[in-house]
Amino acid sequence: MSVLIVIPARYASSRYPGKPLAELTGATGEKRTLIERSWLAAMQVSGVDRVVVATDDDRIKTVAEGFGAEVVMTSPLCANGTERCAEAHAALGGGYEIVVNLQGDAPLTPHWFVEDLIAGLRGDTAKGLATPVLRCDGATLNSLLEDRKAGRVGGTTAVFAADKSALYFSKEVIPFTAATYEDAAETPVFHHVGVYAYRPDALADYPSWSVGPLETLEGLEQLRFLENGQKILCVEVKANGREFWELNNPQDVPKIETMMRKMNLQ
Image (cartoon, rainbow, N blue to C red; front, side, top):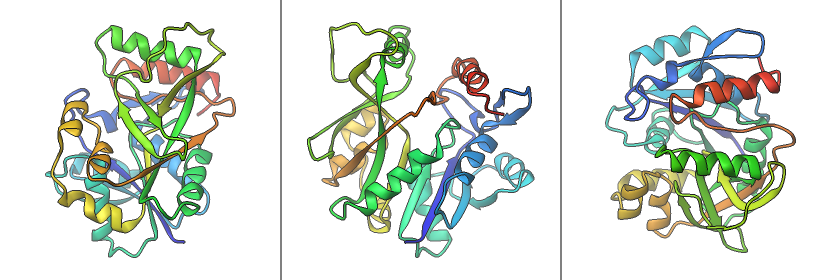
C-alpha cells in the first residue's frame, strides 16, 4: 500500500496565530519551528512514500521549503486539517492507498504511533479511517483536568466500543471518573492523539458533508465522520516511556520544551 503523509499547517488560528512558526528549543538549545519539528517527526515514520506540508500561507511555505520540505499550496477556505489533506491529495493526483494527517501541532508524536495507526487501518477493512488513542497516566489526566479548570482548551479525549469503533471525542475529559490517581497510575481516560489515517474514498467524501452540530460545538473535525455514519477505528498506542503533548496554546510551549529536555530530543 502506498502511503502519503500530509502535514496541514495554517497561519491563522483563533487560539494561537502563527503557531506553525512558533519556535521550540530542544535539549541541546537549538531552536526549530513547530512546523519543522512536525516534519522531522513525519520523516522518521517507516513505510511512507511521500511527506508534504499543506498550507495556504506563503510565510509557512517559505520556511518549510527552507528546511527541505515539499509544499502543496491549498485554499484558505479549508475549514480544518482534514479538508486540507483532501485538497492536497487531490492536487497531487490522488492514487495513494492511505493518506495520513499528521497535524502540525504534535511534534512529540513518536514514529511508532503512526506506524501502528497505518497497520491498524490495513487490518480493518470495515473502517474508513483510524486514529490513535493513548491511555492516560495520572499525571496526564491531571494536566487535562487542570487545563479545563483554568478555562483552557487542551487535549482531546476519546471513548470507544469493544470493537474499537469510536463512540465520541470531546475537549471535555471523558469518561467522568471521581477517583484520584497517582502520577504513574493507569486511568480509564484515553488521550486522543491528533493523527488520522484515511482511506481515499472516506477522505474525498469529507468536504462534501455539511458541518454538524457536534463538530460545531466541540470544534473537532473528526466528529463530522461520526455524524455522517462513518466508523472510526481507535488504535491504542503505547508511550514506551515517551511523553506526549500537543501545542494547543502558547502556555504549552514551555511544557513541551521541558518534555524535550527530559527525553533528550534535539
